[in-house]
Structures are given as structure tokens and as C-alpha cells.
Length: 129
Image 1 (tube, rainbow, N blue to C red):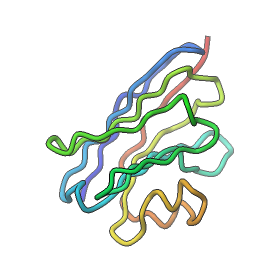
Image 2 (image 1 turned 90 degrees about the horizontal axis):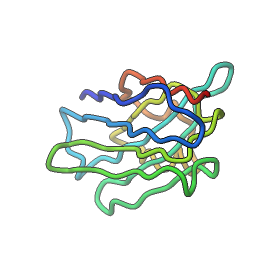
Image 3 (image 1 turned 180 degrees about the vertical axis):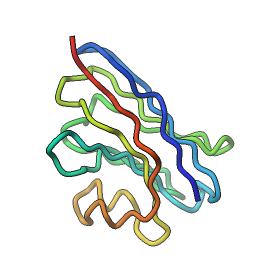
Image 4 (image 1 turned 30 degrees about the horizontal axis):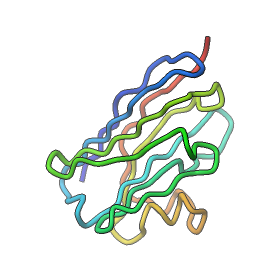
């Protein structure tokens, strides 16, 4: 199982970035993907997720209406489109999955982030003018 996140960088407040998570070694039809972020001095938090079979999505309140998660099952890719970026979105972003716990359970606050067994290397997002 491998997850590879990419697409981070520097954006101005109000700008946009699109993150990509490439999954290998498992099928997105059977396992959901979550996006998480960790800002300096803060605990890692769930940002968004997409469930496996239904494709239902969830978002943290802080990004609702600004971020959109989507997936391309043919390419085993999951995207996080981030619009209207704010300085407080600055963090290292990770994608993660688990074969027993739905990542959406973490994003919805029912589980802690360390319930996820598989993590990609993070990608840094910096929002600054």
C-alpha cells in the first residue's frame, strides 16, 4: 500500500491549489481516502474524505464550501481542490487510508487521526502574501 501526495506550494490568500493523492496497492472502490493536515504546533486534523463504495464526502467545518474532494477511480487518484485559501490553511497536508476504519469517521470526529494505518508523505501548503 502506497500513498503519494503532491501539489502543495505557495498560494496567496484567496488563491487556489489542487492536491493529488496517488494510491497504489489497493482499490479505491473498497477503501476510502482522507485528507489531513498538520499545522505547526497543532494536532493533525481531518480535512476531507471520500468513502469507498458510495463516494460520499465530508468536510471539516473550517474548509466547508471552499475545499472539494474528488476521485478518479480509473487512475486511482484522489484530488483536493482548495479555493479561497486562508493563511490558517497553511499546513502539511497528508492523504491516508485504513482497511478497517473509514477515514470519514476521523473527519467527522468519531475517530482520531491515528486510526489510519497508511499515510502518504505530506505536501506543504503555504498561504501567504
